[in-house]
Length: 321
Image (cartoon, rainbow, N blue to C red; front, side, top):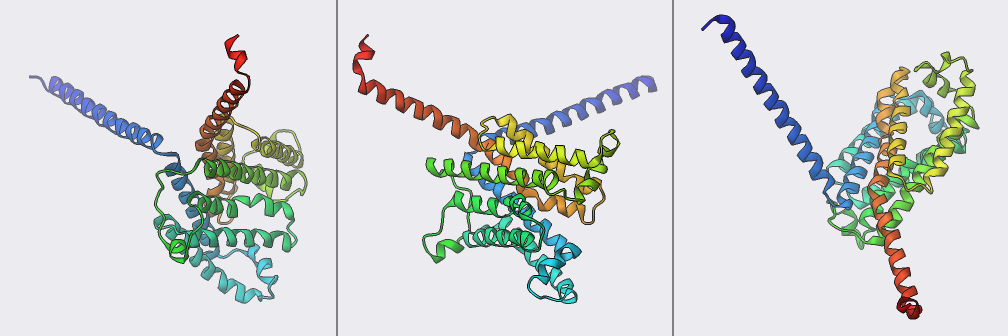
């Protein structure tokens, strides 16, 4: 056999093995995706919220560990000197990172309640230091997603219940899931309206640098106008989110949110990577609605069926005609 023939055979065998390997990997990924899609609704929500609060606290904690000058006004509000604030930031950061890891590994009701309360408190610091109320509204995911995670499992019945580890539940009440859908839609509406108002109403200066990083300033339109148009668009998205029932719409919201927060990275902002990670809960919220919307449609169909049956009972003669 010639060397060229031998090389051709080896090449063919190598390609066959590579094709088989790729096919095997693809099948495994498809099987994993199929397994995830067939998991119970509450299992998906449990893990979405779990990952969201983990990203939020680890990202926020890493910003603290690396220190941020933007946090100094929050410390000054409590008469904490700047030099002491610089030393406190890493301690707060490490504490937040620890909480995020605990929330991912072994979440507990008491921890989630603390996370929701701490997120609410830190969001309130923004208007308290003169940054405006829209900042508080835009941070709705910081306190809303931990609260939604807590409501998914329900409040503790006793002290031991509050500190017991939480595992993915296998079932949940219909009413609780409907309440969760309403709550998460409110969170999404608040964060989009708040963020949009920062550009369209408050004219937040830092947004200009983010939009400039992807070339929006070279479109022949003043960057300030671009900021206003994007802000108005986001406000509209937030209002629509309150009433929308399209899964495609909420999938687009998730993509938009990831893309807009990725601008921290593209603009080279200080700690931009951790700023992106910190907003993980805002990416999770639309995905949670994607899971809950089929339930809403099922609820509507069930109510229609019940109403039609009730009508039939009230007017039996109509069925006979």
